[in-house]
Image (cartoon, rainbow, N blue to C red; front, side, top):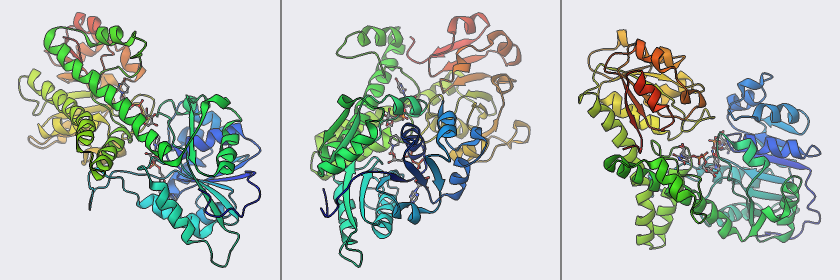
Length: 475
Ligand code: NAD
Ligand code: UDX
């Protein structure tokens, strides 16, 4: 909607993005790379994060994504800038992306389901106060349907003051990138979705993407369809994972192989082969949060059966994580107390350093509760992050007290396996697909177990080296 139509030109030269996170950073880097004539400034309140984006050593960027260092290296200092000067960047921008965090509320009405919109509101208020002239405000964050109404209300309240030329258009432009493939997703998107009511603003944003995205892939809808499409896409994708994980458990009970089943159903062109990989449950900052938000909104609109339908996708996902932790304990003679378990992978998926809602957090916490000593190895996740996620500092087994669970970080699978009763693969890092089974068996206690929650290991090679093997979905 155009709150005021007093703007004459929508030529975009200056872009500001509020939020230098997993979405704001990579998305703006690709825009700046593909549009070298623009000035794109990514701002954040978190000075440490901005400093890391500005680090001359590109291997220290705060977000790890394959190919991102090269894109930032090309654009930074030319068309791409990272700064903590939020108001200045807003004031000189023709277009402002809101790419701030929208986690699930932890307290108050809707706690555990509704999105916490305080960062969106704060950034919209900041735009309202600092903008000059006509500004296109773009919702890049994933938001509950009809949030644009609130954004418009905040922006329009700032009009009519001393600066009568201050006007706004609000668009929704949700981001569909997946972590680990962010750069290629942004460079070759299946589609770009733009929702809005102001045709000139819609076309201004579309012309930005048109520098590298084919016109037929740029979809235009109204605001509410755009907001709801993002929640729906994530709900459908997560639903596929819960569906295949439910069948994985059934395969284990019946002697079927979930990978055969996935191939058999995935060749049906109506179903398609992607997102049918069973695993330890979906993680990441989006799926659970967005489904819970959908559930909350359905309840708000009195659609209780619809809410219950989607809620089951999350319930099945929780069950999958719990059942893997329980299964490890059962197979290790009903107790893991004082036993060393090598955990391979902590990130929620391969090729990212992100651990938000990682299944590893829940599975490791359950094993710690049972008194295990976890020797964790992940190629990208640092000890500080794991300590935050597990709520306890690392501790070597020798100094661990009594029957309390403990954990330590290891530099390699071999180091983690040393003296362990079991290997537990939780993230599908490429390196874990070809492990040195005889070498691992030689340093582990017997009987040695392999629990492969991603079904990526060479189970025959592991068995030949003397391992007992459980793989998700393989009966
Ligand atoms: P993030 O937490 O990594 O980054 C958000 C950043 O916004 C933080 O660095 C925070 O400091 C900053 N911020 C918050 N309020 C601010 C303010 N008022 N001024 C300046 N900076 C502020 O989050 P993210 O993963 O980048 O996700 C951002 C949004 O994009 C969310 O709505 C998320 O649902 C959505 N999304 C995420 C992904 C993903 O893969 N992570 C994909 C698609 C969409
Ligand atoms: C997701 C959506 O894919 C993306 O479009 C949206 O913008 C943000 O949320 P992301 O969470 O980064 O992206 O990664 P994704 O590849 O979707 O994986 C999510 C979780 O599902 C991971 O834990 C992954 O391991 C798991 N997964 C994915 C499976 O268990 N099996 C699969 O077949 C696919």
